[in-house]
Image (cartoon, rainbow, N blue to C red; front, top):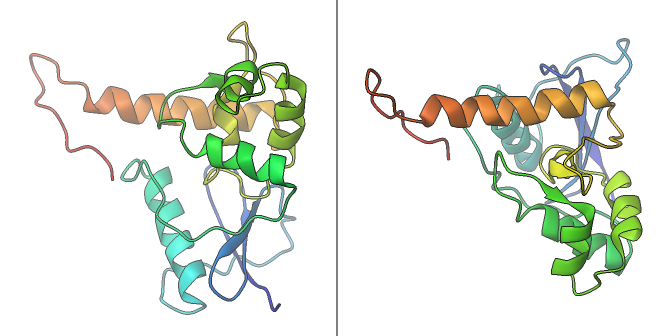
Length: 175
């Protein structure tokens, strides 16, 4: 299979987006500064990369809460099940490793969920940043704790902007 990639600038640093012929297979952080930014919002590039670039830009702008992209992460059956479950965590909410394990029917597999979470190849879009410790504390994140904190706070800020106040009408929710 042939893979294509682009890089994009984001508030959490440069991201590398990788796609196969018809599906996104990776979104990676910590892309070296020497890698050129090749945003696809100008319509150049494979359609799935153009769409991923546009949707991530909208997500960072607070105009999108869900992604509508074909995904094809490579992993074990258990990892794939965990990653599917991550996509079910609503925007602005969190779940513990134990909650994810219980939802998978394996309540004693919290550590295995943590290991699968740490190997998630599609950062942000498969929202591993929404998984926290049982105590509610932020725990490990492959992109670093500052990024995890930023991503969670970004989602909360977007949701707060949608909450009506007596002086402010309700904004339109992001897609």
